[in-house]
Length: 431
Picture 1: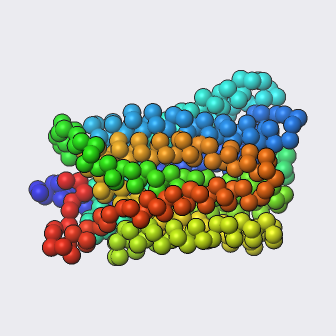
Picture 2: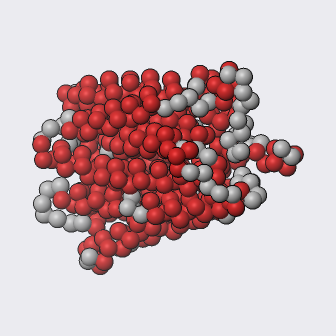
Picture 3: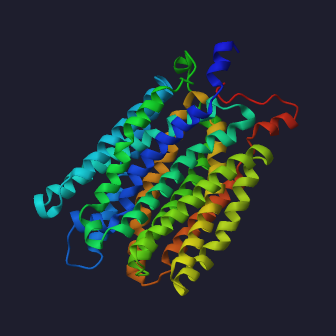
């Protein structure tokens, strides 16, 4: 390996921050829609039937997942052929433009059905952009990191995502505290979106300074057969499926607390803060621990803990509704799920072949999320309304968590030190 290549792979803290910051902003702009689903439903989907506007808003939120696979294919392949950095820059610019558009669309009372139609188109554009983000940015992190720190570095992919949840929750809590319910529904949610859009130029600047980790000439090499990485792809898909459902049930806590438990808006948004804090903590813990003891144990044991906590946790929230139960359960569940899911994602990022890493990660992630993430919040809202059972989200979450646990147990250890213990050199993930 020549000096230039070695130098290119020596990732710095500023470069990790550039990827993480940009990734967090993309997820913030995408997720803030669901956190303000009640207010957005009132703005764009007025209805005299209780719960109809909320379901319409959540369905529009889910529509943003439909174009994720398309974005994953287009931008993921771009990342494997043109470079990781151009793909990251394009996806970031697109989601910023789409988010600005959602913040500026007039309400139903001013332009009628044009309002929900325009929001739907912009959500589809957001989904396309975000579909290609994960593959390129994760490939960059995996390839730029030293083998012994790969888990820590790749974990910042999930640190950014969960950090977006945390910041969105803080913004929502602050706005719900200082604004009236009418102001929050009228323009408060627009302000929350605009705050994310204002920082887009900073993210573009940071990403523009990143080095390129795609090796020269790598795009001309033949892609490996699917059979060579089928097991990794299946494990990745099932663990991402489980994490997606668990994540969006957790993110639904704000809406659940406001609609099912009838808690005040500032208490409901506090659940999002707890979820975000638990997610960031779990991601950081997974990165550090997986570099020391391996990916498999850090996947499996936190997932076991999550499965054991889900039903008792939701029962506690329903039996003793209020901020102590809501926030503590939200934090604990997200901490356990995020720890296992981050370790599983690290496994996928380093185990997939470099030639197809950006595209494969993007497509696996996007399909799992578009099919299951896009329907989760609508499904749990409908199940709760149809059955009248406040534990409906818990049963849905538990089923997904068990699927993820089974996949994690089938995974093979991929940490570099496992090769060193067998007398092999630690692999370069970009090789």
